[in-house]
Length: 220
Image (tube, rainbow, N blue to C red):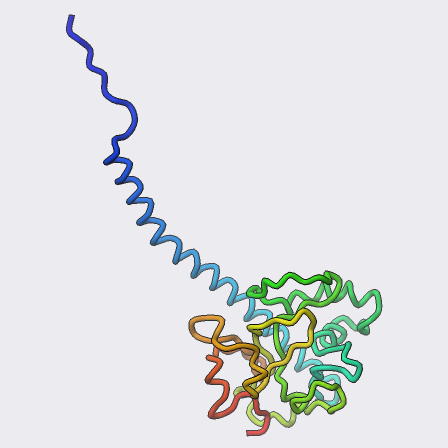
C-alpha cells in the first residue's frame, strides 16, 4: 500500500508576512482617504453653519433698522448668538421656552471641529466668533453696534468665523486685533472658514485676513 502524504495545514511564516504587508499597504492607502473624507464632511457642515449664521445676521439687521447684533448686551447675558436665536424663534432669551429653542435651533452654532465638553446642556453652545468691530471692539454692551450701511465692501468684510479657542459660554468675538484672533494658525490646510457681509463663505488663511485690505474693518 502506498503511504499517504499529509500536507501541512495553516500558513507558513513567509505567507503570514506577505499578508501583513498587503494589509499594511492597503491601510496606508485607505486611512488618508478616510481622513480626507471626514475633514471634507466637517468642512461642509461648517460652511452650512456659517451660511445660516450670516443669513441670520443679515435678517436681524433688516428687522432692526440696519443695526448688527451686539457682541454682548448691556447686561452681558444676551450675547450675539442668543440674540440671533431669539430673532429666529421669536422667543426672548431668558424664558424657559428659550432654552428649548436654543437646543432646537442652536445646532448651527456648534462647529463639527468643536470637541469641548460643556457643563450646561440647557444653554446655547457657540463655537463661532462675531467680528469684534460690530461693537467698535467693545464688549461692555454699552457701545451701539454699527449698521450694515457702514460696510463698504460686503464681499471683503468678515461677519463671523470659526474659533480656535472656544469659550464655555457664547461670549465669542473675533477681530482685527491680533489678541482677538483666539489662537494662531488655521483649522484646515488652506485656512479658516469665514462668512462675509454679503452672505458668502470663504476659506481664508488667518494671516491674510489682516490685509491689505483688512477684512475685519468695515470702512476701507
